[in-house]
Image 1 (cartoon, rainbow, N blue to C red):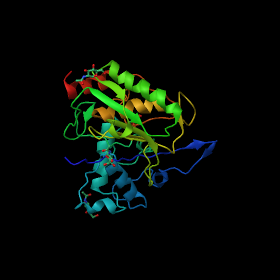
Image 2: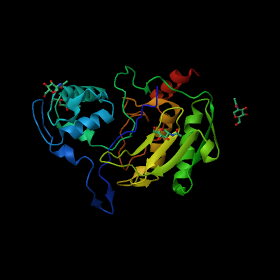
Image 3: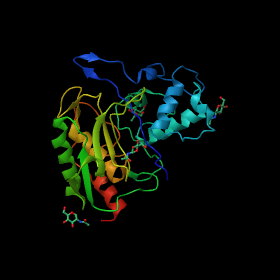
Image 4: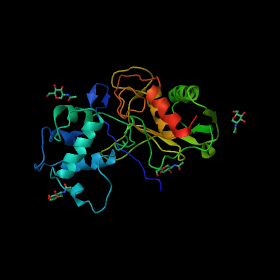
Length: 269
Ligand SMILES: *[C@@H]1O[C@H](CO)[C@@H](O)[C@H](O)[C@H]1NC(C)=O
Ligand SMILES: *[C@@H]1O[C@H](CO)[C@@H](O)[C@H](O)[C@H]1NC(C)=O
Ligand SMILES: *[C@@H]1O[C@H](CO)[C@@H](O)[C@H](O)[C@H]1NC(C)=O
Ligand SMILES: *[C@@H]1O[C@H](CO)[C@@H](O)[C@H](O)[C@H]1NC(C)=O
Protein backbone atom coordinates (compact mmCIF):
# COMPACT_ATOMS: atom_id res chain seq x y z
CA UNK A 1 0.00 0.00 0.00
CA UNK A 2 1.39 3.35 -0.91
CA UNK A 3 2.58 5.07 2.13
CA UNK A 4 -0.70 6.22 3.36
CA UNK A 5 0.61 8.78 5.51
CA UNK A 6 0.00 9.44 8.53
CA UNK A 7 1.24 12.83 8.67
CA UNK A 8 -0.59 13.53 11.31
CA UNK A 9 -1.86 15.79 13.19
CA UNK A 10 -2.05 16.84 16.33
CA UNK A 11 -2.23 19.65 17.79
CA UNK A 12 -0.27 21.38 19.91
CA UNK A 13 -1.56 23.41 22.32
CA UNK A 14 -0.71 25.34 25.28
CA UNK A 15 2.81 26.32 24.57
CA UNK A 16 3.71 27.86 27.82
CA UNK A 17 6.81 29.72 27.10
CA UNK A 18 8.30 32.22 29.44
CA UNK A 19 5.00 32.26 31.26
CA UNK A 20 3.06 33.42 28.23
CA UNK A 21 0.33 31.23 26.82
CA UNK A 22 0.50 31.35 23.06
CA UNK A 23 -2.59 30.98 20.93
CA UNK A 24 -3.67 27.40 20.87
CA UNK A 25 -4.14 25.29 17.76
CA UNK A 26 -7.38 24.25 19.45
CA UNK A 27 -8.96 27.67 19.60
CA UNK A 28 -11.63 26.53 17.16
CA UNK A 29 -12.84 24.03 19.76
CA UNK A 30 -13.80 26.63 22.33
CA UNK A 31 -16.82 27.64 20.21
CA UNK A 32 -18.02 24.09 20.08
CA UNK A 33 -18.40 23.16 23.74
CA UNK A 34 -21.67 21.32 24.32
CA UNK A 35 -22.64 21.20 20.65
CA UNK A 36 -24.83 18.36 19.36
CA UNK A 37 -26.09 16.83 16.17
CA UNK A 38 -28.14 19.39 14.24
CA UNK A 39 -26.05 22.41 15.27
CA UNK A 40 -24.32 24.56 12.66
CA UNK A 41 -21.30 26.33 14.10
CA UNK A 42 -18.14 27.88 12.73
CA UNK A 43 -15.26 25.52 13.48
CA UNK A 44 -17.11 22.24 12.99
CA UNK A 45 -15.44 21.64 9.62
CA UNK A 46 -12.05 22.07 11.31
CA UNK A 47 -13.04 19.55 13.95
CA UNK A 48 -14.12 17.10 11.24
CA UNK A 49 -10.80 17.53 9.46
CA UNK A 50 -8.96 16.99 12.74
CA UNK A 51 -10.94 13.83 13.51
CA UNK A 52 -10.09 12.63 10.02
CA UNK A 53 -6.40 13.36 10.59
CA UNK A 54 -6.37 11.33 13.81
CA UNK A 55 -8.14 8.35 12.24
CA UNK A 56 -11.86 8.80 13.04
CA UNK A 57 -13.25 9.80 9.64
CA UNK A 58 -12.30 7.87 6.53
CA UNK A 59 -10.55 9.74 3.75
CA UNK A 60 -13.09 9.45 0.99
CA UNK A 61 -13.13 12.12 -1.69
CA UNK A 62 -16.87 11.59 -2.25
CA UNK A 63 -17.43 12.56 1.34
CA UNK A 64 -18.29 16.22 0.87
CA UNK A 65 -19.80 16.54 4.36
CA UNK A 66 -16.33 16.87 5.81
CA UNK A 67 -16.17 20.49 4.64
CA UNK A 68 -19.47 21.65 6.15
CA UNK A 69 -20.00 23.31 9.52
CA UNK A 70 -23.03 21.08 10.18
CA UNK A 71 -22.89 18.71 13.15
CA UNK A 72 -24.17 15.76 11.12
CA UNK A 73 -24.25 11.95 11.40
CA UNK A 74 -20.69 11.82 10.14
CA UNK A 75 -19.41 13.90 13.06
CA UNK A 76 -21.63 12.23 15.63
CA UNK A 77 -20.43 8.81 14.64
CA UNK A 78 -16.76 9.90 14.57
CA UNK A 79 -17.14 11.35 18.08
CA UNK A 80 -18.79 8.18 19.35
CA UNK A 81 -15.91 6.09 18.01
CA UNK A 82 -13.40 8.47 19.58
CA UNK A 83 -15.21 8.42 22.92
CA UNK A 84 -15.42 4.66 22.90
CA UNK A 85 -11.73 4.25 21.97
CA UNK A 86 -10.63 6.48 24.83
CA UNK A 87 -13.01 5.07 27.42
CA UNK A 88 -15.10 8.25 27.67
CA UNK A 89 -18.87 8.21 28.02
CA UNK A 90 -20.24 7.66 24.52
CA UNK A 91 -22.47 10.71 24.27
CA UNK A 92 -22.01 11.67 20.62
CA UNK A 93 -21.69 15.34 21.55
CA UNK A 94 -18.93 17.68 22.70
CA UNK A 95 -19.20 17.19 26.43
CA UNK A 96 -16.53 18.53 28.78
CA UNK A 97 -14.47 15.33 29.09
CA UNK A 98 -14.36 14.91 25.32
CA UNK A 99 -13.41 18.56 24.83
CA UNK A 100 -10.65 18.22 27.35
CA UNK A 101 -9.02 15.16 25.76
CA UNK A 102 -9.44 16.48 22.21
CA UNK A 103 -7.48 19.58 23.11
CA UNK A 104 -4.46 17.70 24.51
CA UNK A 105 -1.19 17.55 22.62
CA UNK A 106 -0.58 14.18 21.04
CA UNK A 107 1.48 12.22 18.61
CA UNK A 108 0.86 13.04 14.96
CA UNK A 109 0.18 9.45 13.92
CA UNK A 110 -3.55 8.65 13.62
CA UNK A 111 -5.31 6.07 15.80
CA UNK A 112 -6.59 2.83 14.35
CA UNK A 113 -9.88 2.47 16.20
CA UNK A 114 -11.01 -0.66 14.32
CA UNK A 115 -8.52 -2.81 16.23
CA UNK A 116 -9.95 -4.94 19.06
CA UNK A 117 -6.72 -5.28 21.02
CA UNK A 118 -5.28 -2.32 22.92
CA UNK A 119 -2.11 -2.26 20.83
CA UNK A 120 -2.48 -1.93 17.07
CA UNK A 121 -0.49 -1.97 13.84
CA UNK A 122 -0.35 0.13 10.72
CA UNK A 123 -2.61 -0.94 7.84
CA UNK A 124 -1.00 -3.96 6.15
CA UNK A 125 1.20 -4.59 9.23
CA UNK A 126 4.45 -3.31 7.70
CA UNK A 127 7.60 -4.43 9.54
CA UNK A 128 11.38 -4.63 9.19
CA UNK A 129 13.10 -7.56 7.52
CA UNK A 130 15.92 -7.62 10.05
CA UNK A 131 16.46 -7.10 13.77
CA UNK A 132 19.71 -5.20 13.09
CA UNK A 133 18.70 -1.62 12.45
CA UNK A 134 20.66 1.58 12.07
CA UNK A 135 19.88 5.14 13.07
CA UNK A 136 21.24 8.64 12.57
CA UNK A 137 20.57 12.16 13.76
CA UNK A 138 20.37 14.98 11.25
CA UNK A 139 23.33 17.30 11.34
CA UNK A 140 22.85 20.03 13.92
CA UNK A 141 20.47 18.03 16.12
CA UNK A 142 20.36 19.54 19.60
CA UNK A 143 22.85 17.74 21.78
CA UNK A 144 20.50 17.29 24.72
CA UNK A 145 18.36 15.00 22.55
CA UNK A 146 21.09 12.45 21.79
CA UNK A 147 21.32 10.58 25.07
CA UNK A 148 17.56 10.41 25.65
CA UNK A 149 17.03 8.93 22.17
CA UNK A 150 19.89 6.44 22.68
CA UNK A 151 18.32 5.43 25.98
CA UNK A 152 14.94 4.96 24.32
CA UNK A 153 16.51 2.72 21.63
CA UNK A 154 18.20 0.71 24.36
CA UNK A 155 14.89 0.27 26.16
CA UNK A 156 13.28 -1.24 23.07
CA UNK A 157 16.37 -3.44 22.50
CA UNK A 158 16.13 -4.71 26.08
CA UNK A 159 12.68 -6.24 25.48
CA UNK A 160 13.18 -7.49 21.92
CA UNK A 161 15.77 -8.98 19.53
CA UNK A 162 16.27 -5.54 17.94
CA UNK A 163 19.79 -4.12 17.98
CA UNK A 164 20.56 -0.57 16.93
CA UNK A 165 23.77 0.90 15.61
CA UNK A 166 24.66 4.30 14.24
CA UNK A 167 25.13 4.91 10.52
CA UNK A 168 25.51 7.88 8.20
CA UNK A 169 22.23 9.75 7.81
CA UNK A 170 21.41 8.91 4.21
CA UNK A 171 21.86 5.18 4.78
CA UNK A 172 20.29 4.82 8.20
CA UNK A 173 17.00 2.98 8.77
CA UNK A 174 15.89 5.55 11.37
CA UNK A 175 16.44 9.21 10.47
CA UNK A 176 15.89 11.51 13.42
CA UNK A 177 15.52 15.28 13.26
CA UNK A 178 13.80 18.34 14.65
CA UNK A 179 11.72 20.24 12.12
CA UNK A 180 8.83 22.65 11.92
CA UNK A 181 5.31 21.42 11.22
CA UNK A 182 2.86 23.67 9.48
CA UNK A 183 -0.82 24.51 9.65
CA UNK A 184 -3.23 24.64 12.50
CA UNK A 185 -2.53 21.03 13.46
CA UNK A 186 0.93 20.78 14.83
CA UNK A 187 1.84 17.34 16.02
CA UNK A 188 4.19 17.05 18.92
CA UNK A 189 6.24 14.53 16.97
CA UNK A 190 5.74 11.89 14.34
CA UNK A 191 7.35 8.53 13.59
CA UNK A 192 6.54 6.76 10.34
CA UNK A 193 5.76 3.10 9.83
CA UNK A 194 8.35 0.58 8.56
CA UNK A 195 10.27 0.87 6.44
CA UNK A 196 10.12 4.64 6.08
CA UNK A 197 12.03 5.34 9.29
CA UNK A 198 11.61 9.12 9.49
CA UNK A 199 11.21 10.48 12.99
CA UNK A 200 10.50 14.19 13.41
CA UNK A 201 10.27 16.11 16.63
CA UNK A 202 8.32 19.36 16.24
CA UNK A 203 10.99 22.00 16.62
CA UNK A 204 8.43 24.47 18.00
CA UNK A 205 7.67 22.53 21.17
CA UNK A 206 9.44 23.14 24.43
CA UNK A 207 11.64 20.02 24.66
CA UNK A 208 13.22 19.16 27.99
CA UNK A 209 14.86 16.31 29.84
CA UNK A 210 12.72 15.23 32.75
CA UNK A 211 9.71 16.87 34.36
CA UNK A 212 9.58 20.59 33.65
CA UNK A 213 6.40 22.69 33.70
CA UNK A 214 5.20 23.28 30.13
CA UNK A 215 7.96 21.06 28.72
CA UNK A 216 7.80 17.71 26.96
CA UNK A 217 10.31 15.04 27.98
CA UNK A 218 12.43 14.03 24.98
CA UNK A 219 13.04 10.45 26.11
CA UNK A 220 9.36 9.74 26.79
CA UNK A 221 8.35 10.99 23.36
CA UNK A 222 11.29 9.18 21.69
CA UNK A 223 10.21 5.89 23.27
CA UNK A 224 6.76 6.37 21.73
CA UNK A 225 7.94 7.41 18.27
CA UNK A 226 10.45 4.54 18.08
CA UNK A 227 7.49 2.24 18.69
CA UNK A 228 6.00 3.64 15.46
CA UNK A 229 9.29 3.19 13.62
CA UNK A 230 9.21 -0.48 14.65
CA UNK A 231 5.64 -0.93 13.39
CA UNK A 232 3.39 -0.31 16.40
CA UNK A 233 0.41 1.98 16.07
CA UNK A 234 -1.40 3.60 18.99
CA UNK A 235 -2.70 1.72 21.99
CA UNK A 236 -5.95 2.31 23.85
CA UNK A 237 -4.16 1.47 27.09
CA UNK A 238 -3.60 4.74 28.91
CA UNK A 239 -0.49 3.33 30.60
CA UNK A 240 1.08 2.08 27.38
CA UNK A 241 3.94 4.01 25.86
CA UNK A 242 1.98 3.78 22.60
CA UNK A 243 -1.00 5.77 24.00
CA UNK A 244 -1.36 8.75 21.63
CA UNK A 245 -1.59 11.65 24.08
CA UNK A 246 1.23 13.28 26.01
CA UNK A 247 1.11 15.71 28.86
CA UNK A 248 3.73 18.34 29.65
CA UNK A 249 5.66 18.08 32.89
CA UNK A 250 5.46 14.28 32.69
CA UNK A 251 7.88 11.43 32.20
CA UNK A 252 6.71 8.06 30.90
CA UNK A 253 9.74 5.82 30.53
CA UNK A 254 8.72 2.22 31.07
CA UNK A 255 7.60 0.00 28.24
CA UNK A 256 4.41 -1.70 29.35
CA UNK A 257 3.24 -5.29 28.78
CA UNK A 258 0.84 -4.01 26.09
CA UNK A 259 3.69 -2.38 24.13
CA UNK A 260 5.90 -5.46 24.35
CA UNK A 261 3.06 -7.83 23.49
CA UNK A 262 2.24 -5.77 20.39
CA UNK A 263 5.82 -6.00 19.14
CA UNK A 264 5.94 -9.75 19.89
CA UNK A 265 2.77 -10.37 17.92
CA UNK A 266 4.02 -8.31 14.98
CA UNK A 267 7.43 -10.02 14.73
CA UNK A 268 6.74 -13.40 16.31
CA UNK A 269 9.76 -13.40 18.63
C1 LIG B 1 -24.34 14.79 4.86
O1 LIG B 1 -24.99 16.07 4.84
C2 LIG B 1 -26.36 16.02 4.51
C3 LIG B 1 -26.87 17.43 4.44
O2 LIG B 1 -26.63 18.11 5.64
C4 LIG B 1 -27.12 15.19 5.58
O3 LIG B 1 -28.47 15.07 5.23
C5 LIG B 1 -26.49 13.80 5.66
O4 LIG B 1 -27.09 13.07 6.74
C6 LIG B 1 -24.99 13.92 5.94
N1 LIG B 1 -24.39 12.58 5.91
C7 LIG B 1 -23.69 12.15 6.96
C8 LIG B 1 -23.11 10.76 6.84
O5 LIG B 1 -23.52 12.81 7.95
C1 LIG C 1 -19.62 9.45 32.59
O1 LIG C 1 -20.83 9.99 33.05
C2 LIG C 1 -21.04 9.86 34.44
C3 LIG C 1 -22.45 10.32 34.76
O2 LIG C 1 -22.71 11.56 34.16
C4 LIG C 1 -19.99 10.68 35.16
O3 LIG C 1 -20.13 10.59 36.55
C5 LIG C 1 -18.60 10.16 34.76
O4 LIG C 1 -17.60 10.98 35.34
C6 LIG C 1 -18.46 10.16 33.27
N1 LIG C 1 -17.21 9.46 32.94
C7 LIG C 1 -16.41 9.86 31.97
C8 LIG C 1 -15.16 9.07 31.76
O5 LIG C 1 -16.66 10.81 31.24
C1 LIG D 1 23.66 -8.01 13.70
O1 LIG D 1 24.66 -7.20 14.27
C2 LIG D 1 25.56 -7.92 15.07
C3 LIG D 1 26.54 -6.94 15.69
O2 LIG D 1 25.99 -5.70 15.80
C4 LIG D 1 26.28 -8.94 14.24
O3 LIG D 1 27.13 -9.71 15.05
C5 LIG D 1 25.27 -9.85 13.58
O4 LIG D 1 25.93 -10.73 12.70
C6 LIG D 1 24.27 -9.04 12.80
N1 LIG D 1 23.24 -9.93 12.29
C7 LIG D 1 22.79 -9.84 11.05
C8 LIG D 1 21.72 -10.82 10.68
O5 LIG D 1 23.20 -9.01 10.26
C1 LIG E 1 8.64 9.03 4.96
O1 LIG E 1 7.34 9.41 4.56
C2 LIG E 1 7.18 10.82 4.42
C3 LIG E 1 5.73 11.10 4.09
O2 LIG E 1 5.33 10.37 2.99
C4 LIG E 1 8.10 11.33 3.34
O3 LIG E 1 7.97 12.73 3.24
C5 LIG E 1 9.52 10.98 3.71
O4 LIG E 1 10.38 11.37 2.68
C6 LIG E 1 9.66 9.49 3.97
N1 LIG E 1 11.00 9.24 4.44
C7 LIG E 1 11.73 8.27 3.96
C8 LIG E 1 13.10 8.14 4.53
O5 LIG E 1 11.32 7.49 3.11
